[in-house]
Image (cartoon, rainbow, N blue to C red; front, side):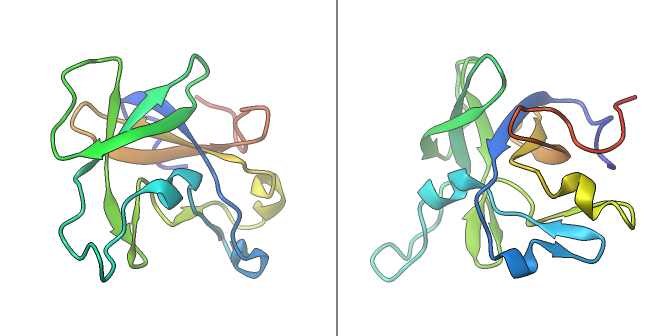
Length: 142
């Protein structure tokens, strides 16, 4: 886990189901975030530019809920903005893979949440995976 020391607000994103054949491939896990399905897409009807940010409300446990999209950082510190990036041809708030040490696939198989560290400028880095009870998976945090 390369990013545990990264500074930023902890925000938890629910993981969406993916093709189980691509869930575990070698020393990484393919990821998809549930929130990505609600982000605007570039298709024939709306082939314009995508918004720069996803606006989130974050509950007391850190779980994110999409409340809108736009091009400016929010003025209120109560709202979190995460940069929208293209991943595998679709907009996403996070990476499409999580890498782990060889032989640790069983440890991460129960992942249901991605823990991202979100900076004030909307940059987000995946720090950990969590289970359905929001417990971190893998090595204990230092």
